Each structure stands twice: as structure tokens, then as C-alpha cells.
Amino acid sequence: MPFAELVAAIEAILLNGGFSQEVAHILAWNHACCERDGAFSHGVFRVPQYIETLRTGYLNGAASPRLEQVSPSYMRIDAGGGIAQVALARARQKIMHAVEEEGVALVAIRHSHHHSALWPDLEPFAESGCIALTTVTGGVPTVAPVGVHEAVLSTNPFAYAIPVAGAPPLVADFAT
Image 1 (cartoon, rainbow, N blue to C red):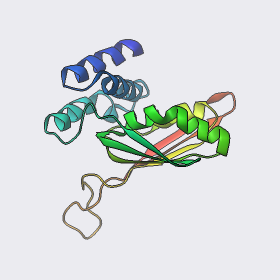
Image 2 (cartoon, helix red, strand yellow):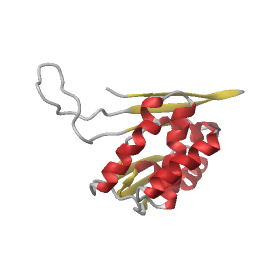
Image 3 (cartoon, rainbow, N blue to C red):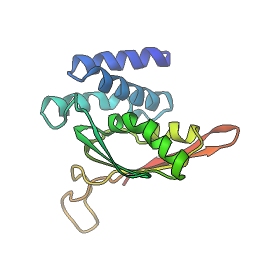
Image 4 (cartoon, one colour):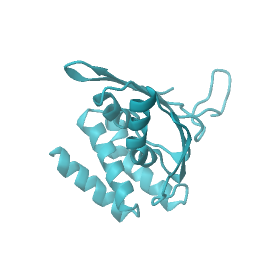
């Protein structure tokens, strides 16, 4: 299936599941990128998880993130119980402006959810010539450390994207 058709199909499913147009489009693009690049565990496979977490009230499918400019290079975003990808997408221009003016931007997103790959959110920054790093902390405990008999840690994913002259960015995305 062509990429644009896959985005449209996922977006339609998410809209039907109760997400706003903006959220559905951003999530659809994210999941389609995962499918396109072979990260099937974070592609279409995750769509039912997003719909279920919306249905249970765990996340807000129409949240409007609020950005607070703490300093010229530091921003905090309250995602309002919504999706981290939406908060980041809405702040992208301000982030790039901070990088252009200050040489660096630090963004902290709180009250958010993220059930997909991180690299699709970072790759556009690397394509613009920036090094991008992200990590996700907190979340539902799913990892039991050695010697412990129940999950007490979240997966704490980490990702980066680095520009490469004349080639696509170097990206890595991993979790425990």
C-alpha cells in the first residue's frame, strides 16, 4: 500500500475511534512511518492500543497542549493527558527557532502518553540539521528487574537522530 494511502487508512480508523483530526493525522503519520521502515511492532499493531486507552479515559484524544517558554532555550509543554507526538509537533517551529537563536533547545513534555516509536518524532529535526535526543520516563510498569517478581519499571525508551551529510539521518530508538 502506498504511504499516503496507509496514512489515510490509519487516520480514518483513529477518527472513527474518537480522536480529533489533528491527533489522528499525527498518529497516523507516526505509525505509517514505522510500517514503512519495518518497525511493525510500533506501526499498525499499536493503533488498537491507542483506541483502547482513549476508550478507557486513560488519555485525551483531543487535548490541546500548552507550551510555557521558561527561557529562550527551554520549554515545558503540558500535553493535557494527550499524545506526546502532538505536543512535539505543535512546538516544532518554536523549538527550531530556539535552536537557530540559542544553538540548543530543551523541551520537557509532561502529562502525556506515548505508545509508539520515538524516532519518527526526531527524524524531522535531524533532516533540518539538528541533533535530536529524547527519552520517556514514567509510564505503566512493565519491566521486572533481576531478583524482582513483578513489574516495577517502565520501559524508559531512548532515541536519537543525527544529521548525515548527503544521506538520511542516523537514527536509533531502543528501550529495555
